[in-house]
Amino acid sequence: MLADKGYDGDTIREALLRRGILPVIPPKLNRRAPVKCDYRAHKDRNRIERRLNRLKQFRRIATRYDKTARSFLGVRCLAAARLWLPSFVNAA
Image (cartoon, rainbow, N blue to C red; front, side, top):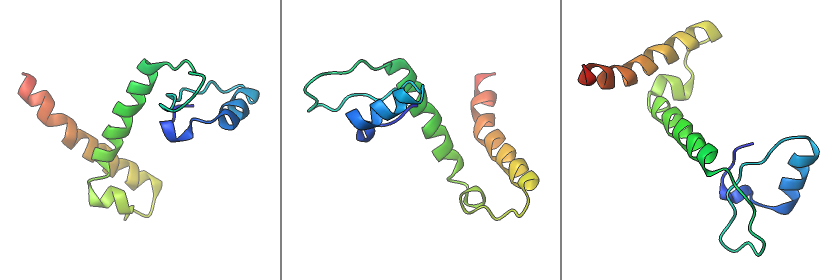
């Protein structure tokens, strides 16, 4: 499970480990016993979260105007293509 520092607690970590889930949570600065963290995986989580936030800037996606899952998926694909195209065109 990838999470922010706000979820850094011994009870949360123990509950995840009991279920067989590896927690990737960076330790808080005031933690007495530092815990290892896979910072590379945490960095990837941050990239994905920022990309999803860019998609949510499209009002139609954020408010989910579409009634069916199929049309909502189509709008998400169009929005993702609109975000991707400028970087592709400028790279050529």
